[in-house]
Image 1 (tube, rainbow, N blue to C red):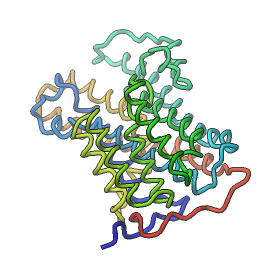
Image 2: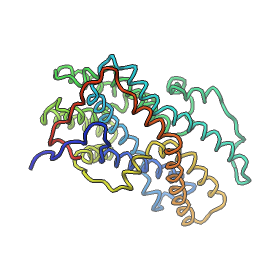
Image 3: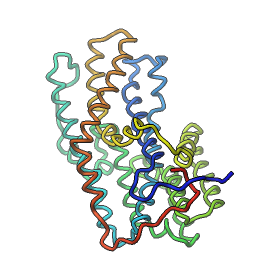
Image 4: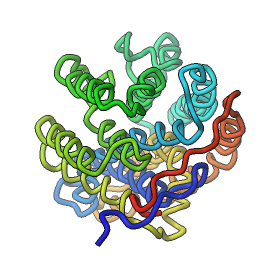
Length: 350
């Protein structure tokens, strides 16, 4: 049997396995944030157990980005001279929905204080901290993120910068250059270990980068397998076998999943919106029901209600906010666009 059986979708078209994983990862994080409060749901409750490892969806996103970003750059003939256009596309695609979600967070925080069931401290906005969210400056100032998912967007932004500057090495046919990048990026996890910066999570991005190199024909099967074993070993050493297993499952899903049900594809489509707004939207529902509802089973039922409301809200947010910026970013082309480079056949499922 052939190692991998079918090629990726043509460049520019959604990859079904990637869309599926985006949706699943976003839903995992959603479930974690809605069930991780032991004062609301008992640790032995079914939903708490189901969402216990939901935070690992963030690492799945890192692996996806490790693959998707250089894959798209390679297909469009990116060179270092395209750096300004690349960043323009990324900023337009990612930043407006992120910044508008901050407005949503602040607005819902204010509305919450108007409720007779509100039990928190009076609303107080630290505008210096709010401004620190712009360009993710809070990673340098140590400011508090208004939503617990924002820190990962800062990590992703750092990855965009690194991959845009190091793409020549990453996509080089010269093994020495590729190996130098791999070793430097892997070693950074030990030398620069702050969780505010990408280096702590370098192994996850390397898993995706190696997959890009293999699918694009830059590296062969042997180099791919050997270097993936090293990357997965690094994940296991630093984060444990559970995250190594999840990383391996993510890699295998990208390689072998071909057909994805439409609901999962749609969940992938709205995954970024769901990721951005599930805490302020779902969190408000949980906070209110924590005061009104004491029955453990009813509280679990309210979690399910919050999940549905978050999905509906994310769908609306995608259509009203995210979709426009996604299409605008997609319409921007590199000035000297090279013909799209097709992935090597028989290396990955479509």
